[in-house]
Amino acid sequence: MLVKKKIILKALNLFLSLGFKSVTMDDLAESMSISKKTIYQFFKNKNQLISSCTESIQKQLVETFKEIRKNADNPIVELFEMKKEAMKILGNTETSPQFQLQKFYPEIYEEIKDREFNLFKDNIQESLKRGIKSEYFRKEINIDFVTRIYLNGMRGVRDINLFPLNEFKVDEVIEDFIEYHLRAISTKKGLSLLNKVYKKSEL
Image (cartoon, rainbow, N blue to C red; front, side):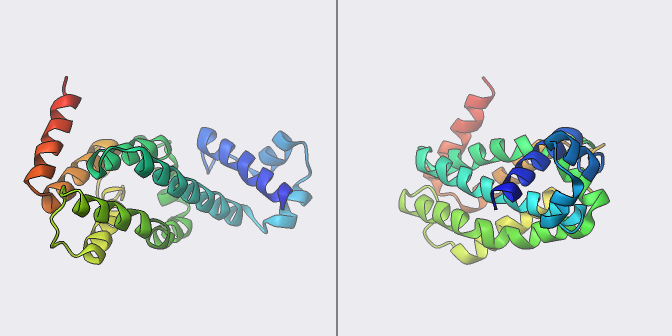
């Protein structure tokens, strides 16, 4: 299992720096000083390796988001901090992992979307509960409904067919969606804080 983890880590590093399409199994084997046969003991093809790598990224993000929630002063700032972390992976250009997966590996891209709900729903729900308890979010919101709408919305704004990269920047679209989401569920106290966050970011 240790070898498999090492392969995933090295492949991730190569994929994120050079692109999913560009990196071959030969490149990976050479960079690790191992044979392709060793790689194929754990992954039957490149697609399976990419799938494992994307799942690893998602799980890493879940853990990162948990840390952010633990350290953030409130659930509103928390969402913007999560967005910053996600953007380190998503990117804004056609060389970004997001674009390459959607264009060249649509089946894997669909897998990612299918995994998102189960991986991230608890995090989102905890954040919503925290927001209600601290009176930043309205107490009457339906947590399950808002969680699903939020995750579905986040999928939509990252869809490069809906928001082409030559017309939209991913980080700006995501930030607009977060604001849209927060303004829909926030109390007056929450809206006041949100306005302060935006005023501070303009300084």
